[in-house]
Image 1 (tube, rainbow, N blue to C red):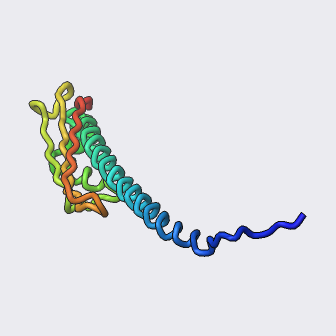
Image 2: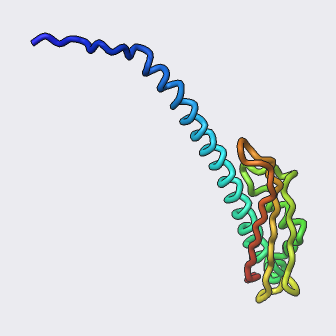
Length: 138
């Protein structure tokens, strides 16, 4: 049995199809990666707020009395929060720390972290805000 090529000419069709499909795939990939960076940033801001509240909750007035170390101040918690983000720029972080009434056990400490994200790719600059509260336990 003898096989012959069909008479239709398709020599350049694969190149034209690739020229149409490859840019679309690369654009989708680029958008996915940029979106992943944004999600990572949001997660880090939320983690920094949660860890700041935890830090303040275990370093209240009882901590100062029992360990003879000073209780955490708003400045201490802010410095701790700014050190938490592995991919966050500390200069773009704003931290607001409040206590319900004092830093005694039974009161709440609230940490609000704002991050001025410069944006990447199709996602423009925006501010991410995370708030976390914890019961002062020590």
